[in-house]
Image (cartoon, rainbow, N blue to C red; front, top):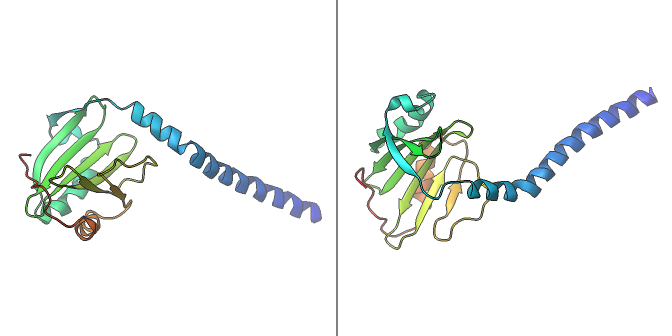
Length: 174
């Protein structure tokens, strides 16, 4: 009986140590992986207009965009992001509140939403449903990650938390 308990304790120890090792490795290498991702990004991107056929699963990004359209966001179109294969974005604007929205779909990262407000001094603020990247934030352009929330909840958070002051206008044309 005692050897069975020892064996069980060893198995539990192995499972726990593997999980702890995975957490430790993620913490150690996250910054390096994030920096490598940034350096592999193109210096410039271009948007090419695309229709609904651009999405691999149109229902998912549509489920994100529809609640925003119901609150008064206006559709600015769907685009492929060149030269980033598989990255598609639907852009929206809410002129009366000076918010932009971008609904993204990426083959590996999935679907996520960014809400952005820009300010006359060139700063901006972004609220996103994507997880934190682990990278340092650009000065004057903070991003608040709130993974797993609904589009409505992210919009409410953005309304409550964005800086005071008059933001730059957000229009479909711009």
